[in-house]
Length: 67
Image (cartoon, rainbow, N blue to C red; front, side):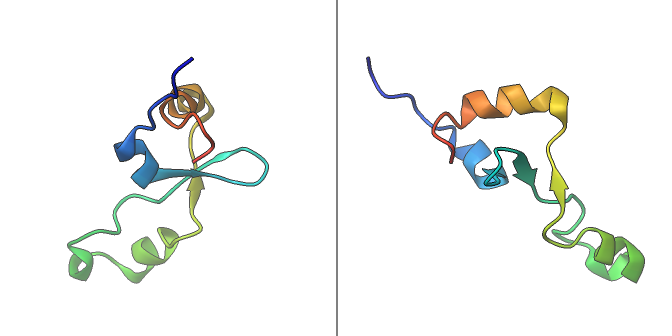
């Protein structure tokens, strides 16, 4: 059986935790930061969010080898 290909776009956006949850970065931290409040920027800092349970199965298909 051939190896499965990892989706490179998903690899850059998601990663797995040790327990198998799918971790993602928070939105609104890329650009236009001068217009955002300190509270908005602080709430979007790095160890941020987990992927939604409804999307998790699709993400796991895109990342077949545990990233």
